[in-house]
Length: 442
Ligand code: CMP
Image: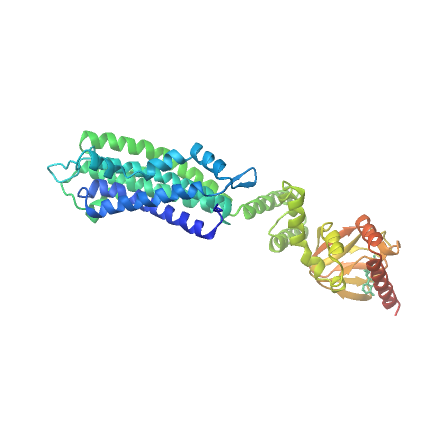
């Protein structure tokens, strides 16, 4: 059984996709400009059918995902395939033209050299069934590839727009019937130009329908164009807004706070600080509210994400180098982010301590209550606020941020658990706390 993630299978699927797109472009061209059945189109048809037949065979051997589990039992895979896209795939794989050609005879060609659309050649259009594969492929990309969903939607929309335009241009060219059977690039270009101006509802009117069939066709294209254009513009607006969803959401938040600031006419200095804070928030966290963004994930996945994101904060602390995996895990899973502004006092000497802090970015100063003595300056990879927790005493110093400090805290409850569960670690922290206290006394 083949897994869909298998590299070769991916390459195969990509090949089928490209071939399908090629078919979708080639067949209408062949139909309108082609000189009937020749060797090249015959080979193309046989090749395509063989390719699709192989693909059907492969599908019977490709595992499917059901309820999050891979089904590899050939019977169940076959039953599932037969129930879903088998019929369409089968239609797409049959070499229709060749079949009818063999059974009935060669296709009719008009006196003017154009192939008769309603003769056998039209059967080629049945191969367009293969386009269902494009839907398959985009769905697959959405699921497996790390492509921004909005970018993918935009690309898909452009793809269909280009393809539809091509088809309509071919049909328009046919309706014009200028008597030449060979493909004239100039004429095709003109037909494509007519199509885009009509679809986009621009309609310059320099190329206009003359005969009744042309008028009816143009009405059809106009109605389709109005709908499609509306759909396109509506989608484009939402896609463009969503392409950088995080930035859009952040900007909305920022606009809201700006409106609030203006409404209450806050002092200029306060306004400036609030704006600066938001700029910093965007720079360091891309405005992400980690807890909110992940709230829908199941617990196990949330834990993994949290471990991945926060582990470096704890591992940066040299003191934690030899700590066991369990301690690191216990700490990492209980960290909460806090940002301190420049010159903000994080806590005052003498206060009751409720949490311990890890510095992820920025600088803080440990100072005396009056702010005159600086006991220590700490940067990323350091921690503070442990003494009040381990000795169950008031804060032994004031801590102030020197610039924007990105901090993570663990609560007293978590800290007490860790101290109780890991006595070796508790002893180490206690020693360090005593050293720090001693240092202060000098
Ligand atoms: P705590 O007493 O909870 O609050 C103040 C914190 O400053 C203290 O915990 C220590 O983490 C830290 N601290 C106090 N004195 C020093 C020092 N001399 N060197 C480094 N850090 C200190």
